[in-house]
Image (cartoon, rainbow, N blue to C red; front, side, top):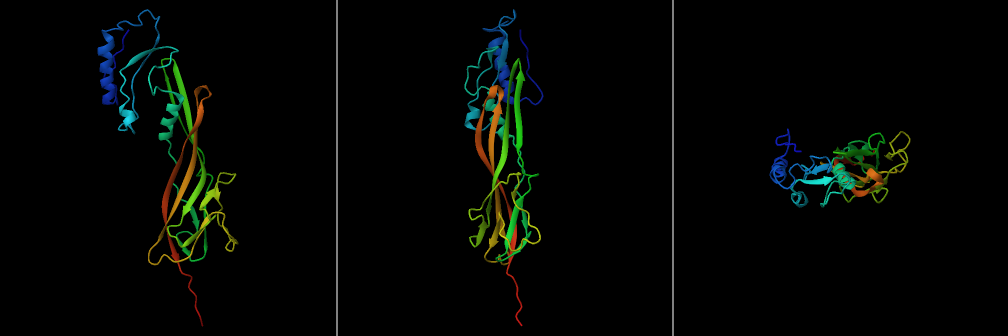
Length: 248
């Protein structure tokens, strides 16, 4: 039994080369008519690289020739597809929202005036990606999930104070971070924010807002575990002005 697939649409060059190896080694060689009597059912396995990481040394080492695995047997190679391998693939496909915090006052603030910072729970919520393989009777699946756990604020100058003093704003029970500013809170200390101690002159300060995401995975057969936390941030320009006063 033999199925020839030499030029599938979108097939990478290395995959085409592997299929050629498959033909040369197995079609007329040791395993000619290997499963003609259906007593040796299974699947052919082939090396496949992540197209986004194919230049990494580990990807270049993925060069096994196509090989046959009987149904129910574990593939006898390093880095064969497992729930964890799929979880790592899903990790690379996570698309997390940009980290732009709401500020009040927005854009322009005053020296010694607390600037409130917050993130809405509707924007920053858990994000999941599922990767699966289902072919030849083999089904493996993993879901990787990222959950925001904290916001770190860096004012862009040493002449500033953060709330809290560590600059790390924890996530609230409802999934939000910080607290929106509202009338009547001008004299209050924000749970998450910045106070500038000098003006930015003719320029601006770059506020760096970085979200830390806790990432874990669950997979086929009850497998699961943690993956490295993700940290993603962006800069926002803030103008800080001196408070003007008039003496008579």
